[in-house]
Length: 342
Ligand code: PHE
Image 1 (tube, rainbow, N blue to C red):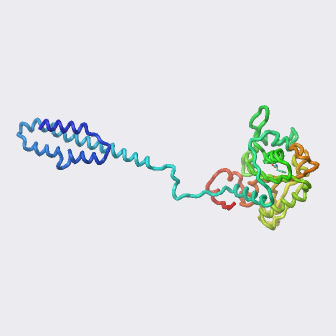
Image 2: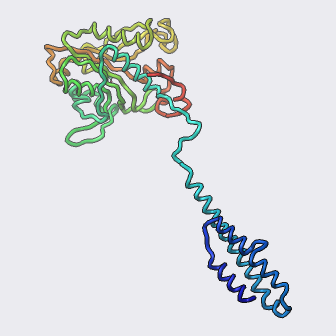
Image 3: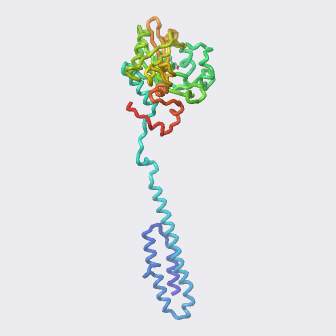
């Protein structure tokens, strides 16, 4: 009997599996109701009293060790199974139900502006946001002491041989276009620009612009006015009127600022237009001959006009959003409200 117990004990101690099926076989073989240990207990009952004394303890220990082995392996296997099921989870799978995003309001307006100018033959040009002094200021006829170069307005990012800055307007892109092509030029340059301003509801340290440039023979101020009138009517509706007020920009002469008739009250006067009936939306003018010269275009043959507007300003008027900060906070509740096909 002792011998049997020892052989079975050896078998149990050497047993190992990580397979649930094999473990079940182990249980049936050793611990089942017709298992080996049960049989030994049956045999034990028939033993003479003396022998029972020596066999009882090892037999009980055998049963305990089989049970222990079973419990341990069972725990290991189920832990393993759980880990496998975690490994099978695809954490990259998109959440369901899938919520589609929507276009950013500034992109909607930008695309709308691009479409309007595409229809009258304007191409789209883009350029770097980090600019050198030449493209952002000097080529555009900014005198060296012009206040716009001041640290208050411009983020200078490197001082070395050449001074770099974050572009303060996308007029810099127009300089690049003029340097690299000859008229006729008809292009708009949408993009992000930076100015060193304290962030508030009405100002931000970056915003977006679309600037336009048209250069050819015999381009006149009347062409500028008609182009802008077309734009205003396409953007704000057929009834929209425009007015031009004299202004100053170093790179245009003459220069003007354009107002559109108030999109809310149609000119009658309300708190959006501060009871003037007009809303300012862009700056414009005839390209200064110095700028053409700087870009290797002959001002005695060619003339042109340029204009520039803030996309946030147009979006503000279209969507009646009065706090500029909302455009860059990425609050889904805000962003979800805009729909646009373009
Ligand atoms: N570059 C000017 C600005 O950023 C806008 C502008 C462009 C004005 C072209 C006139 C002509 O304010």
